[in-house]
Length: 96
Length: 380
Image 1 (spheres, rainbow over the protein chains, first blue to last red):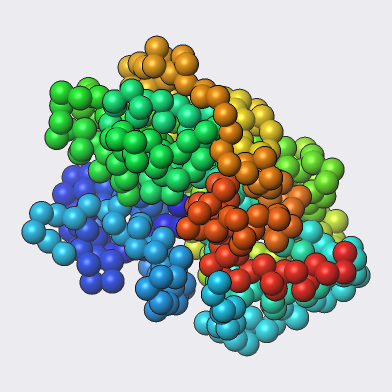
Image 2 (image 1 turned 135 degrees about the horizontal axis):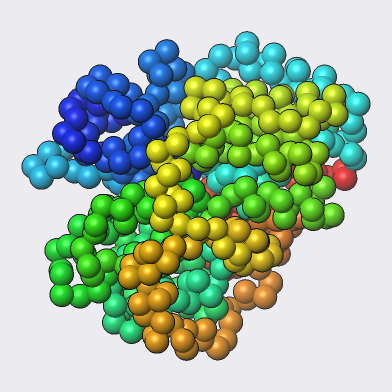
């Protein structure tokens, strides 16, 4: 519960953003993100809220950890935590 | 128990250089008197165990997990409150990890088994949506987590959730517990690795008063194996130089000021209050309590009559043998507990440290951290 997950914003609608997480689109709230964000920005998300805009030059290094974790076995605890974080971001009706 | 994971680094050459630096910077210490550093984050422990970092660290460095699992430090009477509300027929939602955390006698899972309406949510926004869908009945969100998670609870309370939505806060605030652990003579911590994503909210400046008071360095670190090694190397360097200051080893996520917007919302809704952390101590300012302005949302105030008789008699089976508190304080390792891996497993947990995916016992059980550490700590 203290590891956020990065995702890329595909659309912003007021305080909601559509965010792409490894090909899965979810809805994330922007109430507490530290900077204004726009389509194409990467954000760190925690329990369904964006908490930081990730500087573009830092995106690659940020993703490395998650690429390693998500490549792990289905029952890996860290992988399950990351998947739980993804589940916290709301699914739009009829969407992935 | 899983086989130890093979060491895998994004940049093996840099990992090797960091490990060599760690050995060099702690060479003046011995296996019997290693440099003791503590991290305070379940995700750090997960990454350390998962990527097998302890196996690679020099024996002159000892890495202790402190009270970094918010679910684990939730005190039994706080669980009792949630159980009492559920038993009284209210709908109670919480994060999945909280379900099986033992109260004085029962967990929320036990309450659910006896017919109470307990629901698991991944995020507070889901709890708000569920409350909105059933406007006629009170809906209580049993909120756990450190400041990073409390920010989300604060944000929904500031956005006018439905009137039947209430919060039972078990949110905790990390900086004050570092003060408590730093003063425990048994623990003897010489440096703290602070959690990067929590510090993304508070900023690394929040640790400066602590450093000034205790003369212990703090390094803010990320979660990637190289980030963690870099954090330890920075701590070792500060400790050897006798320099007590804050170093930000995770600049891609953390600034000195942190996320002001999140802080404003956090402190508009919550105020720090003293509270008991399971197995550790009463921590002044360690709990996050709803401010008076949010009294109408506070399940403790709204359902005070139900909670008045909340603490049930009795004690969970074998709870008296559980060493979760010592483990959270960094005094004991999971393998020091007689129950670990025997009577206490993730399938049948005795204590909170085995329940949460961020609990030291659960992590060691999953990733086989214990055997490695026993080897390292065989010569105290």
